[in-house]
Amino acid sequence: MDTAHAAPGRIRKVVIAGGGTAGWLAGCALAHQFRDLLDITLVESDQIGTIGVGESTVPPIRNFHRFLQIDEQEFLRAVAGTFKLSISFEGWGQPGDRYLHPFGPAGQGTWATPFHHFWLDSRRRGMPPSTLADFCLEGVAALADRFSLDTRPQVNYAYHLDAGLYARFLRGIAERHGLVRVEGKIGEVERHAHSGDVAAVVLDDGRRLEGDLFIDCTGFRGLLIEQALETGYEDWSHWLPCDRAIAVQTESAGGPVPYTRAIAHEAGWRWQIPLQHRVGNGLVYCSRYLSDDEAQARLMHDMESRPLREPRLVPFRTGRRLRTWNRNVVALGLTSGFVEPLESTSLHLTMSAIVRLIQLFPFEGISPALVDRFNDLGRAEAEHVRDFVILHYHATRRDGPMWAECREMELPASLEQRLRAWRDRAHAWQLGDELFRVDSWAHVLMGQGVQPGPPHPLVRGLGDDALRQLLAGIRAQIAHAAAGMPSQQTFIASYCKAGPGVWSAGMPAPA
Ligand SMILES: Cc1cc2nc3c(=O)[nH]c(=O)nc-3n(C[C@H](O)[C@H](O)[C@H](O)COP(=O)(O)OP(=O)(O)OC[C@H]3O[C@@H](n4cnc5c(N)ncnc54)[C@H](O)[C@@H]3O)c2cc1C
Image (cartoon, rainbow, N blue to C red; front, side, top):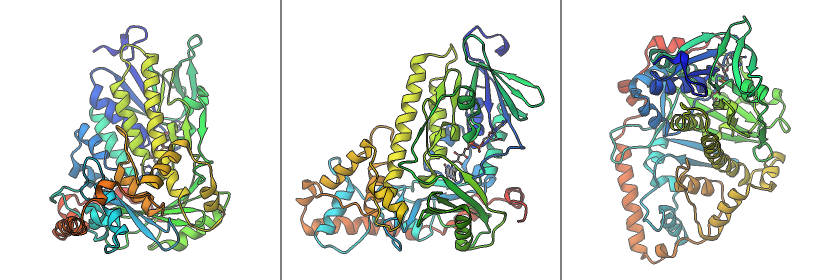
């Protein structure tokens, strides 16, 4: 198709501003889907670089990859990736405790009563203590450091990936599908005098990139959606107090475990993300309660292996752009907002927004109704994730001023409603496309020490022997499946080991 002579209002030229993970995910997906319908250009600045974090994911990434026809083994070799079955929350209820948020289903429920009701009733009846994660293959396999794709039932999993290598991998696909990459720094955003829409981005060297639709992936800067269009931002820092992270990569210490670690401290938490060739670490904190120097000292003190480069400070502001699609600009990735990295949801929200954009793509011109739909869906999705993450901060017995503040804060009404339903009747729910399932809520509510109300009466009608047999049967089946799985290291060695070329490209220059 001749994309240079589109009728007025029609969208043919798309300019993606920014080449972090968000920009390349968008470029890859649009070029893959619409290569014959659109001219797509991506402009990025090596001088500015990318945020360089964002290495832990959630399972729907596999659907997104399937949609892009990405071969899993090729992808994992290219990003030195590992498998993720769970997040291990350490010290969140109180110092010294630990719970898992595994990805798979817990036990077997009925249509009327999710499994956690059966499990809760076993506790009420004084049966041997267990955790909900004991009834989840992903939880048991994670703690035993096992991974396989040949289990029955199949495990539900996500990945840990090297963010720099992932952007490079996506770029390769996008360019193969005809996307044009431009290296340069955007110095100015030009708007149409009459409509106020964005007309072009102008680079520092004077080059001008015109477009019909612009995708703003310039990270927290929000060059188009905010600096040019002044869209506005809803701040969530009164619910999510952390506003900074210090990130550092370290050498691998032992084989990679198949889970992300999230370890609470007095003013935030620390992540540990094991890759094939290194470990990603970071300390997330609230700058009102911990200085940058203290945070860095704490992070370096807690490292279990040698740093590979200097630690890097990453300030952020939790919240959400008031409209992620405004005029002819769509904001994706950090430009659209940021919940915070605790449940590794940012890449997922980006992928989900890209799928929505493809579904609603305005070839025939921008429709306000579809723009509203795009914005409403994105908002609902982000608020759902926000509530889930706030729960971890709010429901805690930890000491210290930051945690006390979180315990006492006024919650969003939507989260308040969930907590009431849990405390009244152990009830949790999942609407339509929501990311976090009933089991996810149950794992975190129990892990954070939120006492549930009585289980469903249907479960209470089950005899002791029948309940004991049901639980023992599930655990035996899971133990059998986990015992047949190799260690993650062994599995990776045969399935997706990254070669030395990948390793060295993904390794930072020595500190
Ligand atoms: C501390 C922290 C931890 C995180 N951990 C996770 C995680 O575990 N899992 C997860 O899913 N997400 C995580 N995230 C979020 C994740 O990092 C981002 O969603 C992801 O990296 C996408 O970033 P981005 O592409 O939006 O922005 P960036 O990586 O900042 O990319 C911005 C791009 O815009 C370009 N640019 C900016 N200005 C200009 C200009 N003037 N001219 C030209 N180009 C320009 C830059 O060069 C760059 O290419 C984390 C975020 C933070 C802050």
